[in-house]
Each structure stands twice: as C-alpha cells, then as structure tokens.
Picture 1 (cartoon, rainbow, N blue to C red):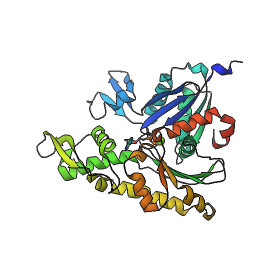
Picture 2 (cartoon, rainbow, N blue to C red; picture 1 turned 30 degrees about the horizontal axis):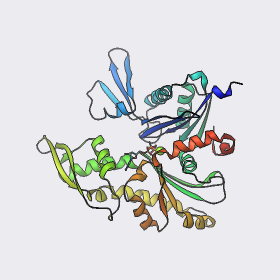
Picture 3 (cartoon, helix red, strand yellow; picture 1 turned 90 degrees about the vertical axis):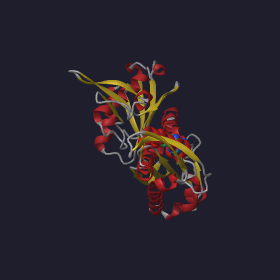
Picture 4 (spheres, rainbow, N blue to C red; picture 1 turned 135 degrees about the vertical axis):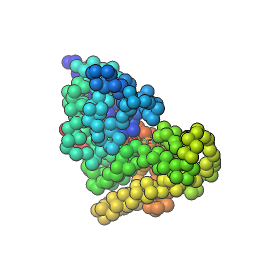
Length: 338
Ligand SMILES: Nc1ncnc2c1ncn2[C@@H]1O[C@H](COP(=O)(O)OP(=O)(O)OP(=O)(O)O)[C@@H](O)[C@H]1O
Ligand SMILES: [Mg+2]
C-alpha cells in the first residue's frame, strides 16, 4: 500500500565522482568522491566537509586537516573514510532512512569480496533495505542504451578517474573483460611529472587536472596551441607562470594511452571468434570522464582500425544505467548480484 513513498537509489561510487539517482526524483548528488577531516583536540578526527567543498581543499591545507580520496584505487581503499563518505552522500540525498528501499550500486569488475562487503555494509548502515551490485561496465552499457540482453556483442570502455573497465557484453552477461587500475587521474600525475622534469615547475594536482580538461589532447592531429601554467619554480622556490605548447600532452600521456590501448587489444584477443563480426560492425563505445580527452577517439580508431564513438553523456553513463535498472527492475534483474 505504501510502496510509492519508498525511495530507490542508484549510485555510481566512482574513484573521482559519486553520482546518486533517486527513483522519481532525478539526480540528487553529483560530487567529487573526496572527504575532509579535521583533527579535533581529544576526540579524534571529525568530518569537516565532503564533495566539491573537500576537493577544493586538496593540496591547500595544513596539518590539522586531512583531505582523503577514499576510493582512489578503484574501490574502498580507506575503509573508514569510505564508509563515512558513502553515508554522508546518502544523507545528502535528504531521504529519511526509514523510507530507503532498494539500492543499486555500480562496482568495478575487479572488486574483491572484502571490498564488495565494505560497500554493501556502508549502504546498509546508511539505511538501505536491499542492496544490489552491478558491474560498472554493465551499468555503463545499459546507460548508453546498448541492448545488453540481446545476442549481439557490444564493447564498452569506461575510462574513469582511477580505473579503466573494458568489457564485451551480450545475453545479460560479460563475455570478456579487463580492468586496469590506470585511468584519467594518472594523467594528472603525468602532467605534474612532466612539468617538474621539463620545466622545473612544481604544480598542484588541481591545476594539473584543470589543464588536462581544458587543453589536453591525445592525437597529433589536434590543433596546436600554447597556454599558461603557474606553479613553484624548483630552482628559485618562487611562484612563476610559464607558457607551454599543448603537444607536450602527447609525450606526457603516451605511456598511459598505450597501456589502455594494449588492454583493449588484449581483451579483443580473448574474444570468441563468433563475436568478431559484431565488434567489427559496432566497434567500441568510450565512456567515463577520461573518454572526453580530445582526440582519444581518433587515436584509438587509428590504432584499432575499428569504429570508436564517445558516449554522449560520458560522465553519467554508469549512473544512467542504475537509473534504467531501477525503472525496469524485473527486466534487468538478471544483470545484478546481491
Ligand atoms: N573533458 C575532460 N577531458 C579529460 N578528462 C576529463 C574530462 N572531464 C573529466 N575528466 C576526467 O575524468 C575523470 C573522472 O571521470 P569519471 O567521473 O568517469 O570517473 P569515476 O567514475 O569517478 O572513476 P572510476 O570509474 O575510475 O571509479 C577525472 O580524472 C577527470 O579529470
Ligand atoms: Mg566510473
């Protein structure tokens, strides 16, 4: 009788961003997976803030404040902080916990049983009555509109912050997959290393991410430009601004992009030959924030000689998948596990 008032939540618990969808309310959380703690004098650490507010503090705080990205390696690496983050985000959804019903959470394919339990326990502790997990590439494939239950094989490559998930899907299951704990956040580090080695410039992680998003390229055919970067000059110890050509990204990212390309090739290599025709026809769909790097689709098309497209709502594919699963729960039940 009261089933209409209970809320079902879909969650993409990403290493970089967490997105929560509430059934019939829409997207209610879309924030960086970051939490900041303050060292309270005698009662240990207390939560200072989460999400965007916490991310803005990265690299800018003193000893008293710890800014943590608990999922940085793909799953809950820092259990205490991870559980606090999941609970705080669900609380932010502003749904009384006694009204929470189902929760569908996207998890990386490489997840261990310990990590799986940690995620389920956090959701249960936040009030969810029933928790279902779905592999992220499966959710992403549903989110981008692939017919995952049909006979034809579809290939999805989700390049997130901390992990790249590659999977070929049909009949409601994953035929072959591969997870790489290397994705777009690693590119931020590559930029920082490059700036240090080539220009003696120390730059922060937030600056590195900003220039990657605004100026980053992955293909030689992209337009050449210069732009300005500021940091600390290692030789003088003083703040300095320099102008750099955008083609440095090609050198800085080559190792990472090569590793991702090789992981895709290895996955294709394991494909049953009967499915080759489907992939030749349909190619692969790139999703996740890393898919938005300019020229990456063209680069992969050249290397793989296959059609490559970028999902239109790349940052939302997994969350959109959890939304569709909640909307047609019985239809998609077979892709979930408890
Ligand atoms: N336009 C862009 N160009 C390049 N990189 C981008 C762009 N927009 C976002 N990113 C990067 O994408 C990453 C975040 O992507 P996404 O939200 O899909 O990750 P996630 O789901 O949190 O991580 P994961 O799937 O690994 O757990 C960040 O590293 C971010 O810097
Ligand atoms: Mg993701």
